[in-house]
Image 1: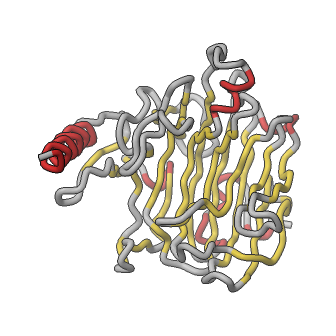
Image 2 (image 1 turned 90 degrees about the horizontal axis):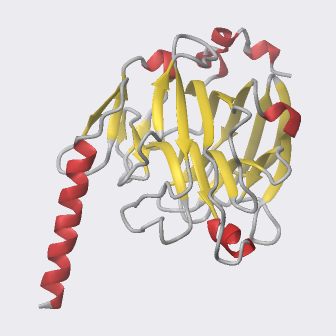
Length: 305
């Protein structure tokens, strides 16, 4: 009897969340579902302006190739006003993404309630990439009033693994520097940090990033490179996947974890935190640098040094 009741409530939960996903409305985005799934998949009105995935292939968890698809994260209870398409702060083209994540802006994933695991996020996630040598392009603008509260972990870009842990992150560190965070190449089971942008350049300006990773099966190793404003900031040879998954994918937006540290710091009575705000533009993934179209931002593959 208890099992029947539990299954009933699970069924109702997913029906409600499917309805929520299908009724989402954000100007510039067109939401849809595939079959009977409850994922908040969406198309973008102007792919080439906001995100160009036309030069790369993706794959489902069972390995079948498909076009690259993107969805909101968290899957359920996505923060109100957590994402918008705007034209006031733009790197190139006419529009750019704007993410906002505030105090208590948490949601639920398929198997977890992030409100109970001290996480908050407003992100876009995608299917696993079906590629080895992969190039990423994106530009980020962080306004001066955007708060990155310490000792919370503040992440603004990720390479994650399907059914596995995170591999790489861009994090805003406690001193305001932008850090390349590597979870698969470390000597103590934690993460390695590389400062890629000084705190004085992190806010109030567009910063252009190019990432080139050769994804190989664990425990093989290959190259990892990150350019910041055309300057090579990360360049080493190491693991590019973990031992639990061989599928990698990109996430962009705001992800905050370890919020309990902040609560503990204030002895269980934390003050209200201000919003974290991040703009993204000129996002592209390809198998070759030339297909990123860096010239749209007055850059080029030849300028990467």
